[in-house]
Image (cartoon, rainbow, N blue to C red; front, side):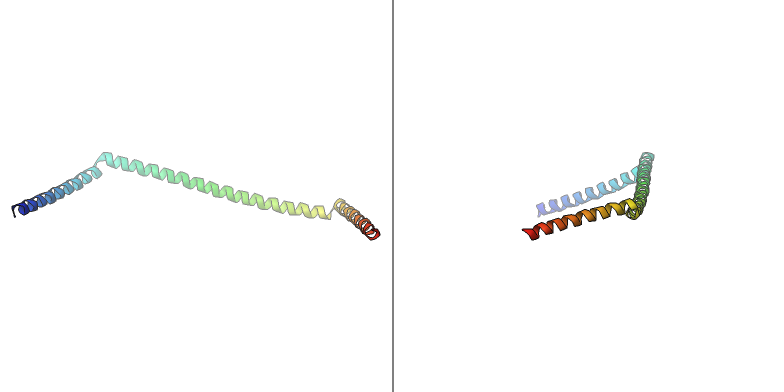
Length: 119
């Protein structure tokens, strides 16, 4: 029983020490948060974070603008390619060149067909 009493006293003593330590930690935490150094440090961190957020937001906006600009350029280039393709297909030079290729191909087909029939 004496050991049990000493154990209980030690337990109560530890609980008291723990309670006092927690109270001291809370008091020091409050003192720290109220100190000018802490307030200055906190404001400085907030300012740095806000500057980074602004910079990243600006970079994102510029990236979006660049993306839209590239999409517009791509659209314009595709439209120009289609217009030039249509102009080419409607030109006399293209029509003559196409007819020439068709004539050459037909002549080869006839020659190969004739050779095949003769063999």
